[in-house]
Amino acid sequence: MNAFLQRRTLATALAAAATLGTLGLAGTAHAQSWPSKPIKLIVPYAAGGATDITARTIGEKLSARLGQPVLVDNRGGAGGVTGTDAALKSPADGHTLLVSLGTTMLINQFLYDKLPYNPQTDQALITQIALAPVVLLVNPQLPVATAPELLAHIEKNKSKIAYGSWGMGSYAHLAGAWLSDKLKADMNHVAYKGEAPMLQDLVGGQLQMAFASLQSARPYLESGRLKALAVTGAQRMDALPKVSTMSEQGIKDEVFQVTGWLGMSAPAKTPPDVVARLGTEVQAVMALPEVRERIQQMGFLPVGSSPEQFAAQVRKDAPVWERVVKVSGAKLD
Image (cartoon, rainbow, N blue to C red; front, side, top):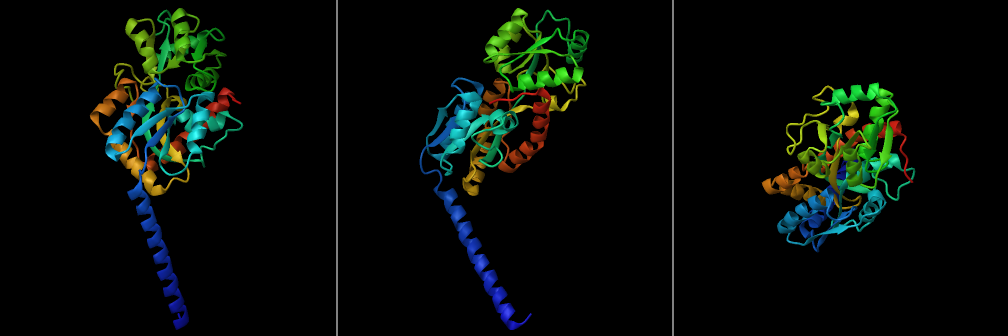
């Protein structure tokens, strides 16, 4: 290399180093100055539900760690789309965050022909707060005691089984539709506006089976008005340890291996160092025994992953949900 090229290369390297140094200092400045005002957690569902309770539990501990108020802003409507859109279109400064379910953060892109936000490009994933497995429930009058027995009963009673869900495109609908397609059972799907009326009809015998959250199903299980056959996901619920997973009972279908989840994200252009700091702070909160116990009581499995781990999990889950939605035929406007 001649002297001119050597000098040019050296100058280029020095300039690049100076630029990187400036960027590094800017990133550090972001982390050091954040948070500079109260933090808002937008929950795209009504107050009082499991997502809301989880957000408030985490927010209280985050406030103590960060020295700023952490406020929960419930913005229900349109199945979570309204609040999610508002959160992801907020200023990308780390002071407005989304705490939501995998439905709005991942699955809706396969259900809707058009969304006001793009889950792949409009959000910076921070942490998967918890897994949200559900319980496979039946009316006690149904002559089955395990999930395989239920599947055999469905095969023997094609076109005669009705299953419920808390809405078109919900996990309860998608899982039921997947099962119906697998067994060629032509089951009847009945969609409700929430879990409460669905469970009441399951108790009343208008439905034969349904998937539901433990938080909603618990009173019916404790009173014996409903029977739990299995839970979804890779591990048992801490709050329902005697009920085995679908997989443990030999049902290995992918739709029963993945679960719903609760996660936290920020608008896409939030500084990476702030996203990393948020991930670290929420992980610390999720490690607290009282927080884990509160989340477990609702039937969730605490996680508290890093942004990188969360992104990897979303990439793994996405093709499964895309296939399940396609099989269900579900489409939302």
